[in-house]
Length: 484
Ligand SMILES: *[C@@H]1O[C@H](CO)[C@@H](O)[C@H](O)[C@H]1NC(C)=O
Ligand SMILES: *[C@@H]1O[C@H](CO)[C@@H](O)[C@H](O)[C@H]1NC(C)=O
Ligand SMILES: *[C@@H]1O[C@H](CO)[C@@H](O)[C@H](O)[C@H]1NC(C)=O
Ligand SMILES: *[C@@H]1O[C@H](CO)[C@@H](O)[C@H](O)[C@H]1NC(C)=O
Image (cartoon, rainbow, N blue to C red; front, side, top):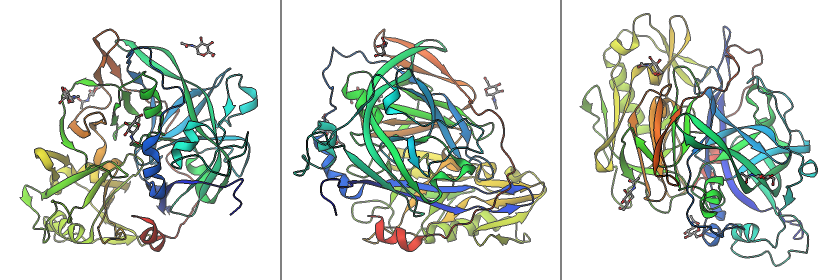
């Protein structure tokens, strides 16, 4: 490795494009994306934001307008719009609670997407065109924090490089820059005004693999993970916000609510986050199908046997360990003994059904530590591919970490139509059923008032039906080696 221009592997983001298929006019775009920080993790603990001086605690709330949807046959992702630079430009970035940093495509980028089927105008960030933009150099705190101290080979003026590798083999790399990001600060009921923050983020100069595919291209990814390198952590360490955020992903209409700040309404019950995990991990105690407990052979909770249940907005479906998956599927199909399922694209179990699925199939609920449960209705875990054909969103993860832990990963089909609150200050995560096209109330610490934040859908139009078929090989072997 060339030490002077060393590429630091900051984080590994596993993005398995499980499948894309055309059936009739419907294209599946199921995304399985979750981040793991691997070697970078311990290095992050000493990080302090470059400008972490505080002028008292001026904690505001922020409203991030959402677009996109979690439909496997449609956008299959949620994104928000950020305004970056001076003069500023708008960038559409996927919101992903499974990864940490913000990065956007930069001018001159090799193989970055130039058009998107999501009907958003793509924009590449131009460092030279922004009067406030500066490259982050390897001697700066932000860079040192990534690697537990400064790179001994850091030369004056050398950039702070990064690379992000995805599970499907695609990759983005570039260098860190710092610039002003404008966010919508909540200043009244359904009212916002512009707030500035100086944020370090990745400027992608090269991409490979499917990341640039136009079918779901966005300008970048906004990671809402726990690391100190995240936008949320940077805003918090400069005294602008509390480390609390929430999302309500509208599984019916698309878009929804995404806000930073303490939620005062609706009230949510919460469960503790498992400490020192790379993802938002909670302890699953039991699973019920149609009111009856699944008989699970091994202990789900307790130290040692703990199965990480990952909560990740950047994943579309839900992935269960084999033994849970088998038992759950048996129960789900129990009331429909005559139903014939066919495997579509070697991946999805699908069947013909003309009735109301909520009457024909059972409700599934997951029970977590501290008596928090999460209910998933049949119309949420089943998705329609034609008038009378449905597919099942539950997937067998078939994945294990190196030390033999099986992965449970709950994505958008499970998280949608609920308000999910991530409280990093108290290390809890909670949720409650909520109408995601309505509103929530967040607390503005500056004034002490509570303000209404409403739903948004910034998607310009529905994007059902696409022409291109893209197929991927599921790189399970790759994941088996990398997840730890
Ligand atoms: C982030 O930084 C703060 C101090 O700036 C430190 O207390 C905290 O432990 C760090 N957290 C992580 C996850 O690195
Ligand atoms: C945001 O930054 C721009 C450029 O530095 C400056 O003109 C503007 O006053 C700032 N706004 C706020 C609210 O700080
Ligand atoms: C976080 O914990 C503190 C202390 O236990 C408590 O006062 C506060 O209300 C909690 N915050 C939330 C949002 O639950
Ligand atoms: C959800 O809220 C929206 C906006 O307030 C309202 O129009 C709609 O009827 C609500 N849906 C349900 C199912 O209550």
